[in-house]
Length: 406
Image 1 (cartoon, rainbow, N blue to C red):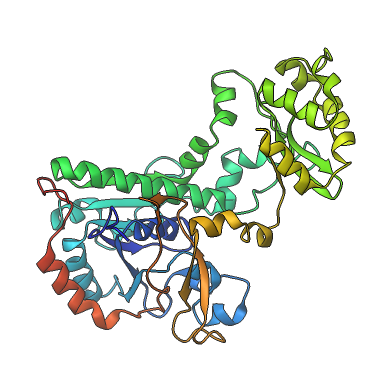
Image 2 (spheres, helix red, strand yellow; image 1 turned 180 degrees about the vertical axis):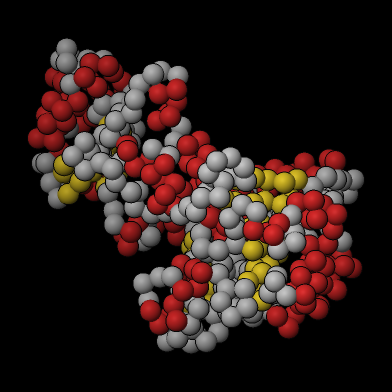
């Protein structure tokens, strides 16, 4: 494929589990050379997380495999003189350093922001924490579950009877990682102008609240406290989950013309003129009555048929899929979203096999971004460290102020 936008960018990845590794995985997909600096003999905690005990015991848990393809792994003990010496030289020639320790941990190891600036004034240093580097909560431990609760996310997930509910995947970790990756890309772009490094202080709590968008702004600006709506969309009606003959179906007829088309296609055109449903706010006020009438009509056909009929007429509609069904959707194959990469050498029971990993959801010049190598076993690239340092010293950075573009 064409050169990727971060080709030549050198990233030191001191992160664990998900938020940080997810960030650096996306930097890798964009072309960066990502070197995981891992604790000797232990490595990223995610190496031991996942549903397969055998993989966990081998340090190749599925949680690790999912976010670390295409990276290198070296083991350095930053509490030992030799490890600090090697890390110092890596920092001197790196473009980006990402860590998700608790606030202040890297500084206590001798690599606070002032020291990093002395070593490399052009370094982009990104610290991802639950609450940020300062403030009364800065030293509190945080996992995704904690952020989901503190952000208010769980208070609006579920129904009045089931709330609070956790979102079914680690969304706060993911949002923190995406926020970090976006900020790093912006800082690298800014460095092309002024040559200066940046200290990026990413708070997962703040990233979660920012991503909640209307849920937060409706309260801050409109004074309306959000409430759990279950499978319904609070901003419009009919918009939510409905009942087809063979299972659930999502419909989002948010615009007037979509509502009118929906009524016609399900054989209930009279609902358009009904005063309870004639305009947007009335439909929201009478949501339950409208949903009951539409469900009576929708139960006459299977979900996939409704999906095809409604979508073809411009009404957003789709079945609700399981994860196995979702990853088999033809659309993903068409765009090359998944990539088959080899299992790491020595993966129990998987010799010579391949696994599928996700892409970024973005095509660059119509080309999907893909990892070029398997996730690394712990310390796989230890022996390559001298050559890596020699190459980094000789190449210099491609993305500094005053350099010519491609």
